[in-house]
Image: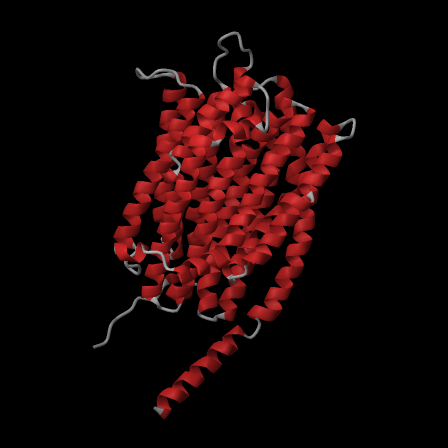
Length: 479
């Protein structure tokens, strides 16, 4: 009996159109995520001075900035695991192996549960020691502990959604993941002022309220992501027995995902190192870095949206051994990403002052934040290319190459250069140069690796597919 099978759109729709249609909702989703991340900073910066503490908003922003490394690490493990699941799942669907795809999805959920347990333990036992390693200010330590403890103990919403988001993206259902992301962001935005300032009968909870609003939004996104996955991802069997861990699948997920985790974790290490190096110069510099980092996420996250479309498209067609579609996926991913980065650079350069001024900051922090935008955005075009390079390497199943690019742009160049600049008399003015210089070095490494990949893994891919088909038909005929 013949069975009608609908072709996955990632294998048939023209790449230029496909990249745009899949990328647009992902860009929207990621920009919403950036907005989601900046809302807490905006509201806590407007906290009213109390208990004889002036500029309490600066203290709160500093506490949130010192929380970055752990929050980035949560994202690193969640996204990295999701990248491995995404690439393998897209590849399996491209091969029409739905049973294997179901096992990959189930094991991804299992790994998400394991990740949450780790951060639950950290949230209970490790948060205070983490802050004391970065600052001795008791006000910042207390605020940071109040905020990060809640975000860690209730991190199952963030981790779980990152897994289900990738499951939806792997099957091309990007709009569903975007809706879930939007709903969570809306919950966070509504709850933030209510819980931080104490509206509608709630007590004013300050940074604690910001943390509660954040995790509430994340849990909302998780619940919707689960609903969309189990209702609409019909190519994947959602039976509970697929959650049973299979060592071979877990190993395959982390063969791709582990470098992605390390790549993202390098951002955590970079942020931790930068917090310490900048703190050697002034507390205001750390606070300015925190605000700048949240602002630049609007541009970077838009580029990550294209990258999230590029990975399943390239992985799917690489599984099909369709050389032209793989090359087109890389090409249009690069074109769209560079356009976004150039546009973002122009926008931030033109409106640096009004954008920074929306936060209630001391004049010193405001001036440093504007200076950061003026300097760091000079490297955005290199950063955009690096994002595409890394996404391409992940889609081709070689996450290690992504790791090399990340090491260069986040650690090997950035931290030593930042430390060297910190020793100079005008450190506050030039230390920001470490970021664009590091992106330029990362670009050079990524460019040459991509050339090698195109020559050795992509060239002749369609011919290999044809030869395989002929050999298979010969065997069938002989039988």
